[in-house]
Image (cartoon, rainbow, N blue to C red; front, side, top):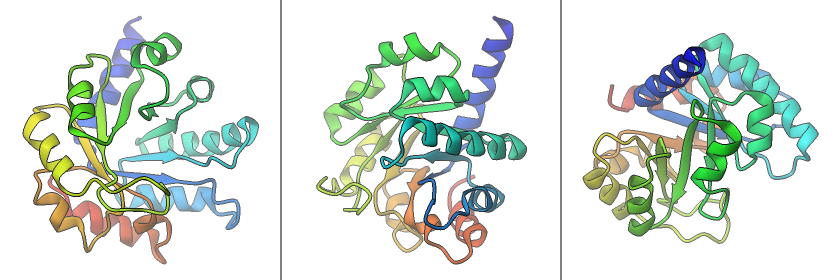
Length: 220
């Protein structure tokens, strides 16, 4: 039990220090997942989540096992999206769910107390619910701008991260959705200090440099 408590505490300490969170597919068309992961972590990425809706469970687990190995080499966190069974099997540090996915209680029943748990929020009411949920460790607000990674979901604009910054207190939250280097100053202007990015890093010619530029622009 002490080991589990220590593991959970270490993960949450890393979450508090985290500023840059990257979501990536398995990059099967490029065949460079391992290389990408090393490059992103070397650039200062704090958390990487594998999110690939095209994968069956076996292929997803295989890709996440690569992510887990690389994350541990760098002493960083890795995240699994939606699938608590996959998170359990791969020993995920972080489990992330959307509004229509598992409840916090359901996720904790499967994963226990030491896994960092986060949820996506798209409205002030959902932010309020996240802040009132003692089982959640962090939440995301967005999409700030429309993004092809979430087709059909309307942008919430800068007002939602601003609302979160005004109400979150010490609870970590990340602004997500179309965030890149050019838009980062506007995000930081809301009071947000953490971001989730996809294309700004995954489509970069120099992954390490792209991640480093974002990480260096975020508050310490």
